[in-house]
Length: 81
Image (cartoon, rainbow, N blue to C red; front, side, top):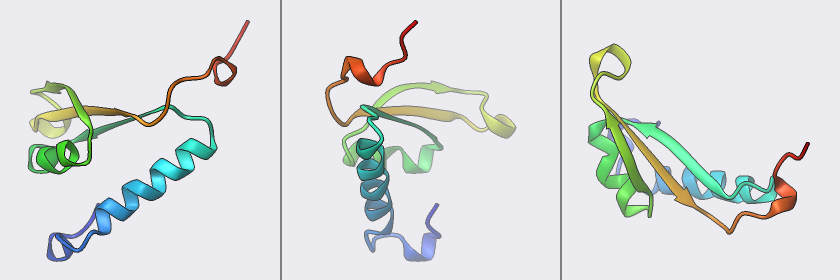
């Protein structure tokens, strides 16, 4: 989370890019996150897709669920029996 006084400086975008790179190193193909209404536009701008809204999220504040495919899934990254 970036303090409001630092918004607009690219800090959150750099943090997301770091997370994306680390996820790719670990074989992850999809990022998922939960946010509040004030950040919905930011995540749309970053290429995330809104999955839905839980109107009764934490403390009664709506939660917004997003995901973003960062690479095609590969079978070797899935658990097998």
